Length: 173
Figure 1 (tube, rainbow, N blue to C red):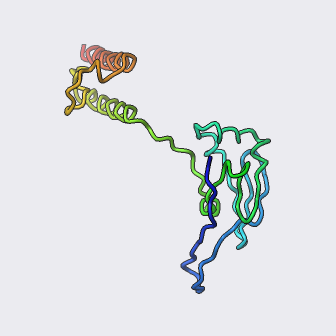
Figure 2: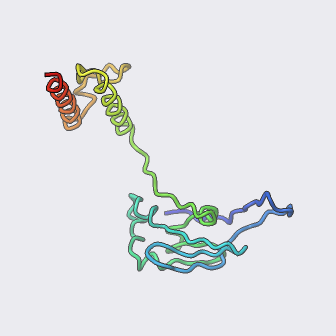
């Protein structure tokens, strides 16, 4: 569940006023798909598309709002825009600047290691066709290649090395 957000203070450094302006939402209107027109109490109007966030989220609690019928059931109360009793809410600052980003899912340490290994492999293959599978293991690691990789990943990388060797051998003949 996404927690309730407080009003955000937006400081206009170009203004002659020394008081901070507290921005709230005064109107919100459904336009189409996952897009709302949001008007703030200072007159600024933003057309905000929530689709990138909704479609990229892995969470079922968020993905349920891809149902347009549910998405259209937002609530505007006390200057806050939310869905289903704060089940889904966005910071007013992000709405004000129209900065709703796609959900970025953190990757696991294994996925990060695999990405690094594949990148390193590509670089090694560009430079040298005699690269072996053992060359792919982290230098600081004392573990065997069998322990480090799951069989499908190992098979994929071994095949990649093999195909690259064959293509370079064929090119030289």
